[in-house]
Image (cartoon, rainbow, N blue to C red; front, top):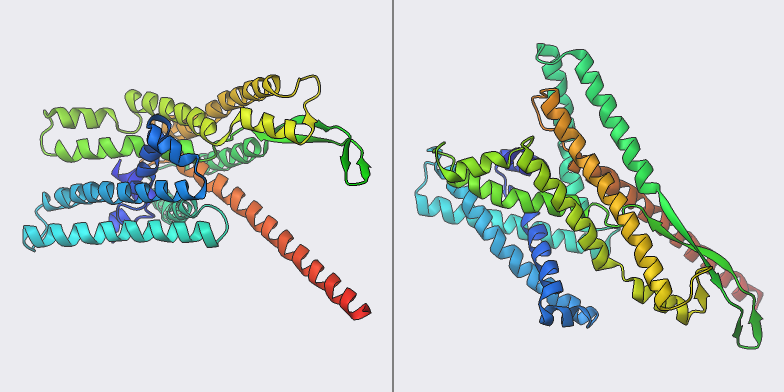
Length: 381
């Protein structure tokens, strides 16, 4: 579990830097707030208030991040202090450690929000991706070292590399898959002109939830298992130690819990961001309809049925991608962790980032062409 936390923090946990606990408290707080917003009426009402409500929910998420970061940094400080390697006084070490780690997490949260508002793509996802990418050179170096020392055969090393490339290909293929629903626009009057009906389609991705389900699932499992391992680290007969051992990578309980959590968050997040009723109403207002489906309630039920089917297969795909490395690590006795979650995050966020860059460049080119046309029209005058 500590190895996976270290991977998400880009190796900063191993170095015990000020970013040791990374951005995971913010992700955990986001999960709690989003779940609460579906249960508590007051938060539900805030979601419907638009931008003002979103700011209040963001403020609650920040408060939750501070609280979780305090708890997690205190746990880290306790774990390190128990190793009998600290020369400072207990109070001084605890205060300095908690302040530094919480400040590091809050800085990462601020940086992610700034990247989202002023940059391209989701800032938090980009920070996690950067942390994962930072560990790739060290992973390659370790693989080469194990091969040169004879701890791993050259054939197994080549198989691991080929397997990783195949998984990347599969992820890119499924992330590019779409379900296109045809949409027809009826004839409508625009001013004095009669606009002819048009035919287009609505693209629905197979994986509509993106990388959120594995990130949320990892965060949900990491937090309690890490606390359990800290509380039961010194006594093998302790209940905490036994519970933490069941949540280790490769254990059946961990695999079942991880798979169930991913599937749950696939459905939950898709329901959170997609509303079939709202989309059906928007189609009806714009004079559009799905061929063979009545506008309104029938269109809403049809879209909901399509999305539920896509979510089912998308959840299976994400679960398989995240669990394949777990089985391979156990079956091949690989002496280091291979993360399907990290691979999925790395590929999906990179694809989304490249799409955002292409869209941004197209917008810039369009604005440049508009400026040139305006200058030409002014010169003619």
